Image (cartoon, rainbow, N blue to C red; front, top):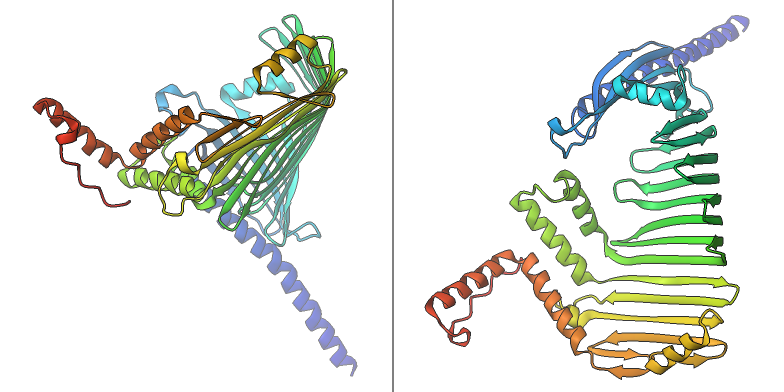
Length: 456
């Protein structure tokens, strides 16, 4: 019985030894293959891998990757690309943090190295640690040393900061915190305190997710503010994209005036997500739609047409603030209704509305009387209010119906411009017909109508 127990124990220990060796071996082989595949796929573009030196080991691997930052849309003769290298050491022993852990440091090269050394000081470098999680999540932590440097007569002082990155194939999270940033020179000064950046992107390519920038306080020689927040949020639901950008300030002091609880929110909702993806992909591949093939040009026109016929909404849902004398608030929305027949007709499908309210003594007596005299504002308790709406060719301002003919004419002209962009072959045919009529001195009414091109 004792020999059987010893045999089982030896078998278990042998199995554990095999597993203990297999995991680092697999980690090392996988890292080696992934790095070579990444380097082979990054020989062109904005971030180019110039050289990969990787030494694979069973328990520890190390190496160096040389990068070059370029502008893939600019000519080589017009560039002075920056170069840097990343040195790394990887431990393939698994831990609670992940399959492997690593340490890294960034080493600038050439002219970039001299410039960076002036900022962070001689002998210092950017470095950090990280790990690859069991689910494929890459985790990296970075430490930025204190920065003291001068540029064009301005002295900069930046306290040490820390950042963290979490990323997989599609998503990314980045958090960065900075205690203080000071710039002084040329008769001015800027002091920023308690800055934090938080990015949580669900799809990096499409830009869905949330980005939040918080600043505890900021002041210059003439302006100071407290509690500044910039927030951007983009969500995707089915085939629609909704995006909202907001800015808020708790206290703003400028030109002797103190304003509180300022808020501005702008939004774009209901965008056709597949069309947005198409425009982003082609725009990136063609350096801003400047070098498109005929097929790409057709895809761009089709994407724009789909976006305009499927409906969307653009607006400023919130604009408000308060001062010692009162409050101001406003909102505005511009909505493009879906087209039931697939044709673009802003004159028919566009509508808009908005309102403005001012209370207290933000307007003096003369300004109040002038606003009331126009008839576009009405008196409300402790202030003034104005509003407008446009729909189906009807323009209303503060409950007064006005002639909307000028708006309809402008929208009809916009429809013709959009149609000419979406269907250039029809526009070219119409221009050719006009030239023939001019040469023959033929009245337009007597000319035959050109045959309609097939729908794209």
